[in-house]
Every structure is written in C-alpha cells, then in structure tokens.
Amino acid sequence: MGNFKIPKILWKSYTTAFSKTASIMVLAVSTLVPGSVVLASDTEELTIWAGRYTPSRTMAAVGSGIKGRDIKGIDPIIEAYQELHPNVKINVLGQSINSDTRQWMITNLTAETAPEIMWHLGDWAVEDYRKNWTVPINKYLEMPNPYIDKGQKGSEKWRDLFYDTIDVWTAPNDDKYIVLADQIQVAVYYNKDLFKKAGVNGVPETWEDMMNAAKLVQETGAAGFATYGNDLNQLTWISGWLTNYFYYPEISTYDTSKDGVLNKTEMANAVKAGTYKFDDPRNRARLEELKRYASYSQNGASGADASTATRLFLTGRAGMYVVGTWMLNTITDDKDRNFDFGVFYLPTVDSSTSELIPDNVPPTNKSAGYGSFQYTVTNSAVKNGTVDRAIDFLMFATQPEQISPMILEGNIGIPSIHGATPNPGLSAFSETVTYPSAPFQEDDSMFDYNFAEKFLAITSPYMYGNQSLSDTVGRLDQEMIAAADRVLAE
Image (cartoon, helix red, strand yellow):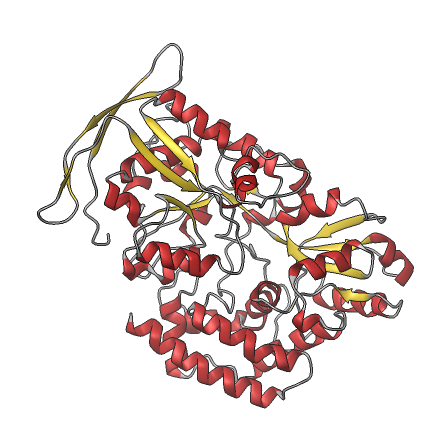
C-alpha cells in the first residue's frame, strides 16, 4: 500500500480501574529515508486541522468562526486523549473551509508542512493517491481499536466500527485514505409560508413535483430556488443527482469491476471508448433539466455566491434552497427569518420527466463519502515519525462516547459509525445515509478538479441562456476527453 516507510510504535493495551483503556507505548527508532534516523522524543506533538469541528477559540484567533456560537468542537476529545496520554500534545490549527482550501492543501502537502491530521475531501485524496501525500489506512482498519470494549463493533477490527461509507473513497490501487466517522447530507430547505401562498400542497416527492412547486412560487413574485452559481457545489449536487437517474440503465456498461460504483478509471475508459459522452441523448436531456432548474432561480443567480443565496432564502424571497445539513444551525438561528421552514431530501426522478429514465430507480445516498469528520494522516506525520500516534488518536476519537457529543453539538452531520448518538434535528436524514452509494460520481469528482472547473465554466452560460446546447456538449466532450487522458496517464 503506497511507498510509505511508516515509523513503528508498538503498544500494549491494558485495562485499569480508572479508565476503560490505556496504552503502554514502546517507541522505536525509525528510518524515514535512507541514511536518516529519527529518534522519538519523550514528548510527542501533533497538529490537527479539524475542519468544521475546529473550536471557536481557535477560529477566533484567526478572525473567523460563527458569530454567536461558542463551539467546543474537537477540544473535549483532545483533552480526554491528552489526559490518558500526558506525553502527547495536540495542537489545533485555525483554518476556514473556503474556495481557497484546495490550493492551500496542495501547497502544504507538497511542502510537507501540512498538519499531521487534516480534514480532507475524499475525492481529492483519491485524485492525489499517486503523490504519497496521505497515508493508506487499510492495514489500520484491520487492527483492533484498543479503546473499544471487547465484543463491541471495532474491538476486533477498527473497520467494523464504521458504516460502509468508509469504503466509498477507495483509490484505483485499492488503498483507502479517509477516516470517515460522520456524514453530511444535501437537502432542500423550503419556505412553508411561500408554499402555502403559492398553493403548493405537501412536500415534493418527485423532480416534477419540485419543478412545479418552483413554478408556482415564482408566480408569486419570489424565486423558486435560491441559487448560487459562482461555484461547483449546487451545480454538481443537482447535476450528479440527475446523472444517476438518466444513466441508471447504463451502469453495467461502465462497471467493469462489477462493484456497483463507477470509479475514475472506469469512467475514463468509457470516455475513451466513446460510450460516455455529453453529445448523447441522456446527457443532453440531463443538461436541459439543469437549465430548467436555473429558469426558476433568482435574477443574477449565475454570479451569486452562497451568502447571497442564503440571505435570499432567509429573507423570504425564495421558495427552496438546495444546500447541506451544515446550514441547519444558520437557518434555524437566523434572527431575521420570519417564516416556518421544512426540509426534504432530493426527490426521485422518473419517466414523467423523461422517457429515458425508468420508473422505480432506487434512491441513493447523495452524499455518501462526505462528512465533517473526514480526516487523513498526512506526509507530515511520515516525516515526523508520528503516523501511528495520529492513527491512535483517530481510533480514540471514533469511540461512540467520544464522537457523539461533538456531532450533537455541531448539528451538521449524521453519525456514520455504529453506536453513536444521532442528532434529533437531522432525523429526517437518518434513513438516507443507509441508502446505497450513488453509482456515478458528481461531475466535479468523476475525473479531476481541472475538469470540475471546466464543467462550471462551460455549463453555466448554457444554463442561463448565453450558449447553445450543441456548443455546450461539444466543449464539454473536448474537456472530458482531456480529463480521461489525465486519469489514465496517472
């Protein structure tokens, strides 16, 4: 698995009267590169970037964070771990998740200056798997978690503690890199007052229901959807959802591994074989539905950012807002909101939308593989000889009794480990995380990030009436062929 020469830290677990588990750590000399020897010191130090679980105290120090909310985040877990292991010091890095995150990560991973434990999107980790920036976790998943009671899930194999979503981000070489212990979900927030005013009865159950609701809301003078078109998020959430319906009959054509999930290599091979292309009836129809969605968005949606769309929805000027569970706190707590809202999962798409779509396509887990507790162990840990220490901390952190309070406080994710306490505010999505993973990746992760950016740049003018469908599919095919070449050249 990879080319890492991982430092060896041997431990023996034993039970004490005062704590469920403790560890005796025997530190060994490790060679990181030929000719260099690193001796472990008495005190070990790690740095973690916890993403959305970064505590307020850290974010405040860098002038960021959520106003009005004091978030403990990962602090209590770190404190409990340090109490159990007094020779360990864990520092928390203050860093926002924003449009510059990917470049910030690349810069630090390239320079081997990244935190030893880092929040990481799974598709990025898989895309970069040949660069040895992150440590494969396969062998660790097969080890017992020493912090789990005997007989409980995870006590024999750490892997058993996780839902199947831990397997979503498996690289073409079969390595896994992401420790995924919770999951976010994409949802549709809707203004109940506007729905009532527009004569929308009930929650949309199909794509046609949702489009009709948007049309009726738009006729009241409000926007059907609060849309932000200046980045990939909403665009690819919706386009990816549509892909899995329009292309459901073609899964077996591309799925050469017969595992039900189409990886980058399989899709790149399909592109090169000419069996997957944008100038195809299914993709043309899918793009037409994206344009239909855009037609119910507010004026200026193509250039709007997320904060603009959020404010549009919160001020009652849009009927629906497609965004993630991480926005629940913001929408719930907003002092200017004067309407009742509800939340529903993305609706099914069937033959009433297109004859190309069979009826009764099973729903999938839209956000399988995406969470807030999604961490990698980086090449900095390899360089510093702290890989096993970082893994040991992640084993400790994924105990249900450790992670549950953090997930409940955050109110943004759903547990994806067995035994963790689900968040009552997100109960509507508990069933969705048990759905199978979507066979097709979204357009921003199907190939690479280069293609993702091209998809936004090319599709947006078409959606908002500034480019023909024929020109759009032609340009997309050209970029997709280049992306397939890059994937297959790796």
